[in-house]
Image 1 (tube, rainbow, N blue to C red):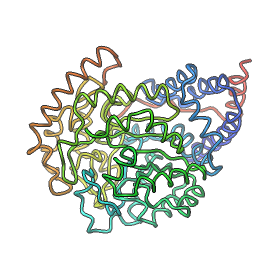
Image 2: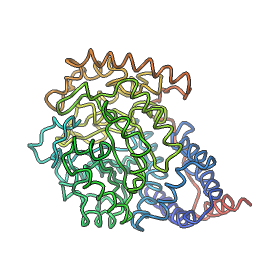
Image 3: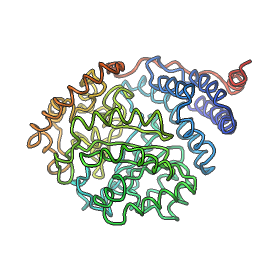
Image 4: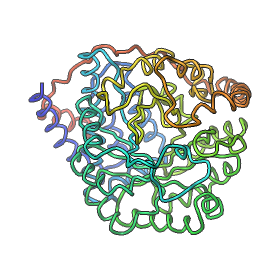
Length: 486
């Protein structure tokens, strides 16, 4: 099995490298031909979302979508080390080899495997932002030891997971993590960061590594950002973005949508600024009342969230930046991602949480393997409860279908991972129920107007994988025909 995988990997890498070099100068029509060919390579079960994603990208290119500009930027404007790691880690390992490796693991072990893991190695942070979702975790301990982080990622790769998100806390306060990124240079890392420590030396190191993509938190323009993160912070992160852009390191932005900044962070002016600074990716996270000083007044109104759903869709079609909406993109992800369905969160104490916003756990990674934690009764219960709602615009068990989260987190053996985590289910529950009802009405109207497919039940484990048997020469011949159109 390992020899076959190595041969397959060798072929993929050489072919993909040639493709990247070719596509940097290729016409849009040639890229579309390549994507139609690439769609056939994974050969996984028909329900696999990788194939759906490739089909979506093909339509994007056929319609001259602004994402074309993003693709060109990745191919032509990035540091050579970064481009190499995008190719090998995200495309070959994550998309091609990883997809099949995960499915093989599912078949062999009879358990579901997510496509990514979020790890918070530390909760220590050099800022003190109000409303921080992680603000109630203890900063007293030193976080996850190097050896434990190393073990988690090693076990993840054995399962076919090559995408690791680093959260926190401020990850760049842990200098030893650079050794993790270097040791696991076959993994793609995305790091959520406040951006304050992205100095010239750090950015040069990121370019040298090539496999780390920072996502910098921003609240809007200078007024909104400095109000939450401290005076002068906005200008610091603008400089950090310019540094990353000029060095050729891929990066994105991360914005928390509140009642007070929704219009700002969804404005053309804000998006244009992020594009000018070099961001290729933007994450939107709806504020929910957890963590430090949970505040219902910070939550978007149901109408604002519905506006964000519409506005993000509009911006995607007009702006050359890849935008993801964590709460409203359930139609793209087949519902909620949590409970190991697509990901889980391991906090700095080792608690294995179903989601970075659901601060409850049944297992600690210090005592269990990653596979054991992913297959826990809690995670299986969450997956078995899906879909929480067939409306893809209402994917979340915390704020869209709160009765589900109250049920699963009341299971025997489940514990809160910090003091006050239960607030969402007791003191705040009447307000959350009201929000859920009001937003649900808007989401149902939205579904009638824009009928995406309903969230479907996915069996656990998935059906048997179709194995790939093509060798490098055969792939090369087919690729040549596909691109030339002969």
